Image (cartoon, rainbow, N blue to C red):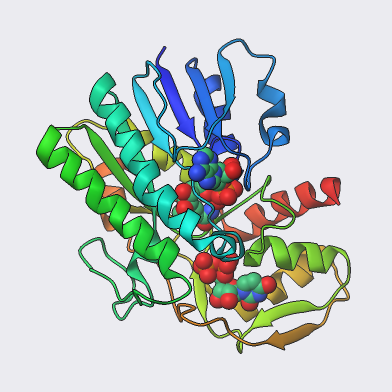
Length: 309
Ligand code: NAD
Ligand code: UDP
């Protein structure tokens, strides 16, 4: 049994991670400021005496005795990370520094939830870990993508300077139950619109692509990386099946048997044209391959949204 801190543990991915770690017999401390996460996401764990929930903002330091830290605290949806852009940068700089100081003091291993966004609007396709990216440093997404790039730099500098035991995972678009209703990301927006027979809002012409990973696959890859000796990443984890946003919309209409129509809205600035992970390194180092195909994942997510709507 390990003592494990999960920051952002009341969020979408964090709640699935806490559940998995508890089921595997660990003691889990979930720290969250409830900006985009909620107590409801971890309600089913609250009666377990190996689970602790603390309302705390990682921008403030915290002292806890732990063996491992999963640092997920950070809003992930463009709508939410742009709502208070300065706060998003602080979470990725001051917050990550606080978590690295904690790892340094307690000799804990720390895993940083990085993102495919560090590749920006990629000119290399699919994206491999040695690609340095194409990011606008002054755009509306930079609070998040530059923030996450600084977070990776901080992780590497604490490793080089203080020998902190680090892991960096670059997460590609992940979806599943417990995404917030007001999350604003494409999968939750389209499913909610389809279930309500409302217009499906495609930004741009819908030819931009993403590769969607079901949350169970992602969380598995995350725990394998955390517990792997002699490999710290960065490593891409996701699903390498690539779809246009228009294809995704049509698939969701079909799976929900919806009467929704497609409508087109302006594409937000700096919205990446394409994205797909090269998973060669994940396969080689972690034995990782995604197992849930997009339709099965969408069906589970649709069932979830039917219960919350
Ligand atoms: P989410 O918004 O559901 O979860 C983020 C959680 O962090 C929420 O519970 C929120 O309340 C909490 N939080 C935010 N700022 C905080 C702070 N300063 N202090 C304490 N808690 C704070 O998003 P998610 O999709 O679950 O993403 C989790 C992590 O994975 C994020 O770091 C995100 O950048 C990363 N990620 C997610 C995806 C994806 O597709 N879901 C892709 C790439 C990276
Ligand atoms: N998108 C869309 N309609 C929506 C929400 C998003 O067409 O209602 C598009 C968005 O412009 C982007 C893609 O879907 O091109 C994925 O957006 P999301 O916010 O889910 O993730 P990210 O852009 O961070 O990969």
